[in-house]
Amino acid sequence: MLNVLTVDVEDYFSVETFRHIIRYEDWDRYAIRVDIGLRRILDLLERHNVTATFFVLGWMADRRPDVVRDIHRRGHEIACHGYRHQMIHAQSRGEFREDIHRAKAALEDLISEPVVGYRAPTFSITQRTLWALSILAEEGYRYDSSIYPIVHDRYGIPAHTRVPHWIDLPAGRRILELPLATGVVAGRRIPFGGGGYLRIYPLWLTMWLLRRLNGGEGRPAVIYVHPWELDPEQPRQPVALLGRFRNYYNLERTHDRLEVLLRGFRFGSVRELVRQTAISERISLLEGVDPAPGDREIAARPPVV
Ligand SMILES: [Zn+2]
Image 1 (cartoon, helix red, strand yellow):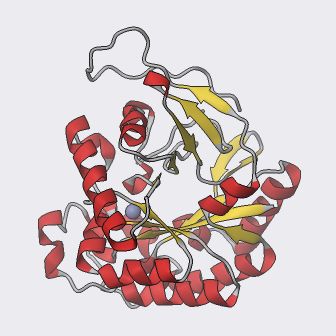
Image 2: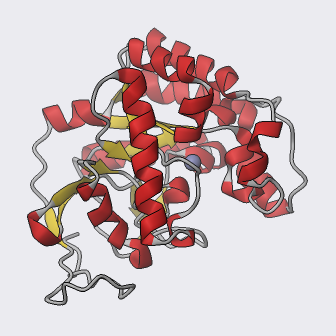
């Protein structure tokens, strides 16, 4: 069973938790440290002969083109994490289109091949921003990995399909969706494997959930990690307890935990998963008969799973 390993390439000052104290306009005042965690991730992947999908921020691509070229030269897949790392609901549809267009162009300029994958900042494709999927497809993206099918204060579509699936969109378009990994325990969905969940849960729990998803359900897991999660010496920001916990807990353990997962399970990029696996599930997100663009919510049919 091939699981998908993804890396969201952004720096410690771009994280949503710090948005109220670090403005986008001030990012250039902070020292870029992305190389530190990225180097550790790239070395790990090389040691275990694994390729991954890297969702790179357009802002970072413009500041550090060498970083993007290096990831690509090592055989990994380059995908897009937006330009400014702004949650989708904070953008108008026009602003969103401009953001993903600008980031895609910046990345494609560097690697001279099409960038077809997208992950929203802070998994911000939710019920009220499903309209973003149509804009992604119109702008040339062929897959998205932004939907967290869980209950969470910042993100999530709690009843959404948990497995990779095609989404039928208006105007005959479609997009492949790769939801982030979840397990079902005592009838409740729980997220696992990525980011804070990898750092906060005991490792045995992550391994158990991954074995169950792969073996019991026969499904791949999509997990994620950030370079700043492998940089325990990063400058600490003065935020409240919850933010400190989510962002800083167990940073010194991320590297070794990721290595245990790479040793015990098979991982690859989204591109590899799509090449090896037939994805037959599909759902529909058709906007109905009203062709006028507006801010009306897109009605979703009940999910398949
Ligand atoms: Zn991010």
